[in-house]
Amino acid sequence: MNNTVSRFIIHNIIPPNTQSFTKFHLHVTSPTRHRSFRTLAFSQPPSVSDEKMVVVGGGAAGIYGAIRAKTLAPNLNVIVIEKGKPLAKVKISGGGRCNVTNGHCADNMILAEQYPRGSKEFRGSFFNVHGPSDTMSWFTDHGVELKTEEDGRVFPVTDNSSSIVDCLLNEARQRGVKLQTGKSVTSASTSAGGKFMLKVEKRTIDYVEFIEADYLLIASGSSQQGYNLANQLGHSIIKPVPSLFTFKIDDKPLTELSGITFPKVKASLKLETLQKNIPELTQACFYRKPCMKY
Image (tube, rainbow, N blue to C red):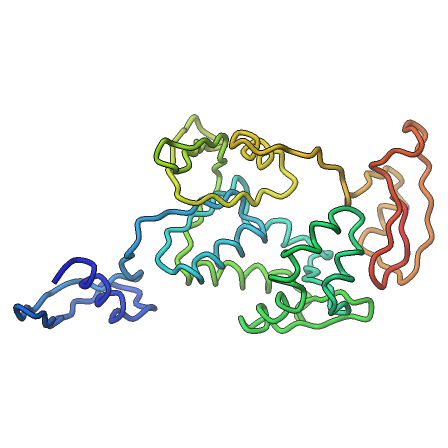
């Protein structure tokens, strides 16, 4: 019996939730002989693939991308490299409640039009492959009960972003995704064999390692890191401009209002040091929300 067949058999008989080493006997029949093997059952079944995928960034996109990869290819070795704390922005989003998606717009094409920039790209395969309804179904199927508020925002019924964070991390752990924190992918290139060569450094100490990967997913959000890696791999970069950002305000009475929301707001902003009609500053209307100037 060849190694491929033996690995297949062991993979399918070991309980997926085994937490300790367990001895067991396996009687295997082949066309030429009968043999009895004694082996060990590990907490993770042996892989039948040496292929490796590296995910740069441990935010929502990176963690979910890793989960999706392991769902489609369970034997793929998936590693997420995050320089900070995984899902840190998810933890603080929505005032600590985590605004999951929009629950009032079932038409993905209409939803795409509400983005001041990127609407053309969103009209492609992005929302067709995984739109808001798919997002809600995924979390519901994984034990997170959701609610849709009057303005269309979707939150976990717990009103706590930890429900979303824990769901994603638990699913990644159960799927066998490996998470490495405190590290950053600082450069990327391709080898003669067609694989990615990644330089990984630690933030706190003088440490460098090189990882060879068959697949690379860049999910670094607005960080310059992702643009640098894409540029090193030969991609052309369109200079990004902000679409959603915060204002730093020194007025104490205003800062004390942080976290308070209103159904309708009319506000104006005086920009004394900036030129008028700057392309980066535009007016956009979001679905079921009033027009905002920023």
